[in-house]
Length: 70
Image 1 (cartoon, rainbow, N blue to C red):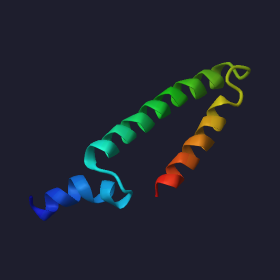
Image 2 (image 1 turned 135 degrees about the vertical axis):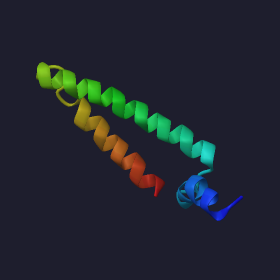
Image 3 (image 1 turned 45 degrees about the vertical axis):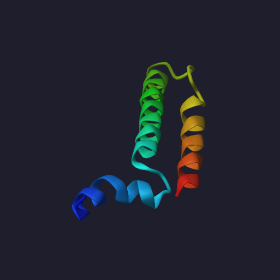
Image 4 (image 1 turned 90 degrees about the horizontal axis):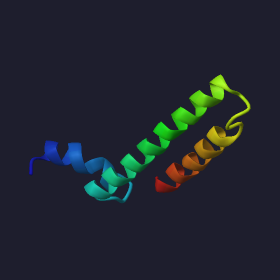
């Protein structure tokens, strides 16, 4: 493998102690959570009484999760 290939696909996952596919799985998991949160916050923007604390609660939890991965 060339060093450029390794850098593009493996450097960052290795920095946080993951393999390529493990990192891919975790990144997709986070992406789907953020997509769901985006929908929840959009609904909250239209109807403020719905999901009053849901968005911020889950964003805080996600932040804790991400900080533990460093």
